[in-house]
Amino acid sequence: MPRDLNTVVSQPIFDESQTTPDPSAFKTTHDPARDKQLYAEVKDLLAKDVVSFDKMRGNPDDLYSLETVYGPNGTRVVDEVKKAGQITFHAAGDTGASTDARGKYRDEITVADQMAEDCHVSDPTIRPRFFYHLGDVVYDFCEPEYWYDQFYEPYRNYPAPILAIPGNHDSFILPSTAPSAYPLVTFARNFCAQDPTLTREAGSLHRTSMTQPGVYISSLNCNGSRRRNTPGLYSWRCITRLSATVQPQAAGAVQTTAQVRRCSGK
View 1 (cartoon, rainbow, N blue to C red):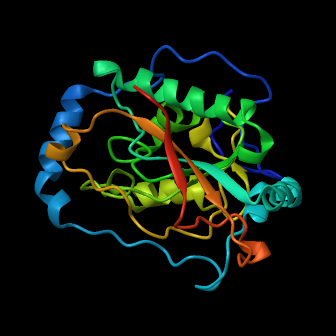
View 2: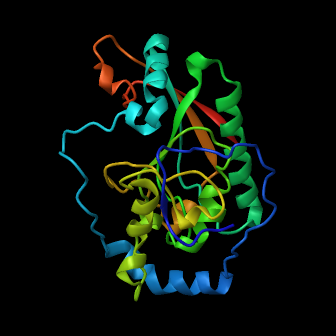
């Protein structure tokens, strides 16, 4: 049953215990007329407003390690990465689909399914260890009621951590929004929790919140004209080879030299 409260658990959970069928429709649908009205109201604000975010936990030079991300399984995962001498991860952004017009929602589900399959069938030496989300997780403006359809259900079978930085659609504050419902408050509840938590946004699913120390940077900022030229939704599979100089505790850090190929998309 959908939960109304946030429940802290002892260790992170990344997927459901059994693979479940794809959804065929949204549980909470968008009202196109309301969406059009919201964009009209914020058109000018989108170009000039900025938002603040809370200071991260810990110190500026602290490392959020892959071992911490995985909880009790962290040591095993990091040892496997060190043995392989490289780390593989998925990267994608602008995944939120508020409509199935032109197959947007079906594209999101298809890409998420292929990413999950990639984790299950890949050789352990190149198995993706996490998904790095580049922003714009939930449309239109990170409203809590749309997280289940646009994030938790599409990635219900993805068996690895999902790390994220917010895009403009995850951070812009609509006029008259209560502080408790600010987009970055919702984003932080699901990605920057103190402990692994079953959030109300996850509904009846069991992926727990991530425990990132805080919001680091706003990534995607796609205006309307650029988005119309977007060719489709893709996931990228990145293989990063670790050099001998990489510190052991930084084995899961994203390096700048990577072999990248498109994993899926339309």
